Image 1 (cartoon, rainbow, N blue to C red):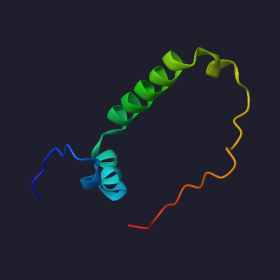
Image 2 (image 1 turned 120 degrees about the horizontal axis):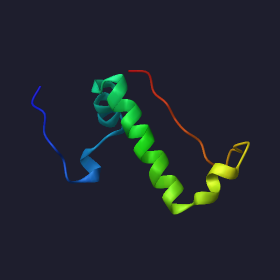
Image 3 (image 1 turned 135 degrees about the vertical axis):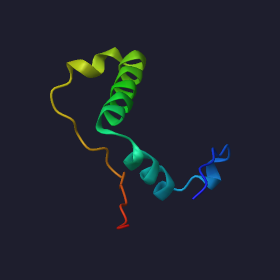
Length: 66
């Protein structure tokens, strides 16, 4: 399998993103999560003050078995 970088979102399937994430080590995955958390907190610092997450009505996450 040749690894390439795609620049068109239509060429990046959810499965391809999942394979990429699974290819990371545990330390690399934690770095990604920490980066996302830092990004979210930089945009909305009040997020850290919330105690309970609530689902957003109408949003559904679809998972498929690989």
